[in-house]
Length: 340
Image 1: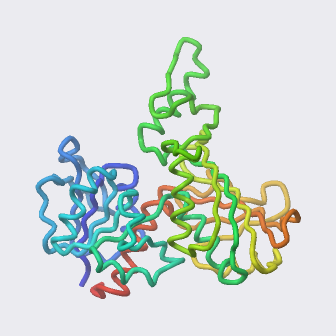
Image 2: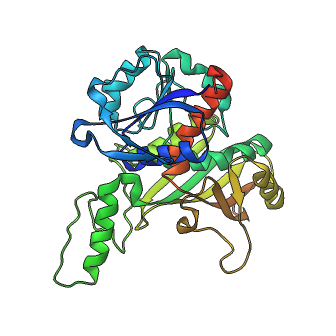
């Protein structure tokens, strides 16, 4: 006996990836429905060997369905997620809409699985921001050992985090560099992204930080420990898929780099590739399509009393979005619904 599952936003990058991962991980699906807006109505998507036609989100009845994985923006989620939740269908939401609601759990299954039981507050579970998800997977096992005081993180985030239009913009601008008669002005981003980096993701806040940077601070505190201090600089880079992060960690207690490496090797969801030689680390291109969060360049930071540096890379469409949502669904099924 399996679950009746709905994927909302099935034609987008993350929605399609959710379908791929549900099939790859052999999630116990009894029946699946794929929903999209009316402009995408009837678009075909694949689920394993099956081809499915999208149904109309606006008229869909969520009654009798076990869980719905939402991969649409906050505006659509605000309209439709409460309807699904009220109909008894547990919503797993990938947007930012519910992440900071104290009554709604924000979950990374390797980090705070116990929070899944709080879904009953509103029948909704939030999926964290892509840059936060991979970082906290690495931070949590180290925090359990030595307690983290402060994190300084710089991100190098791929354009797929902004959607299909951003990927097309990078591709078109890259081609235009080699064609002097072609000009592709920026539309998705404020400046050209091809052969460039942009230190600006999401809107600016009054203190000079961006909302993406604020998200990493707030979400890390909610998922792991409110006492952790976090400062972030989030940068968009000309990479199609895969987010990278340079993370500096200051602990309350000393943690030797070799012990930290051993801890991370044993931690769920992590793969350590850390050889001190040319190419002995993982780049974003190499992580695409993989489930793991990769850790490299692990080393002591001699400028603070108890510091470590590390390089963290993950497929943002997977662990940063679709994979984490499916893992939440698996956790929900295993710990709460218990049908599969």
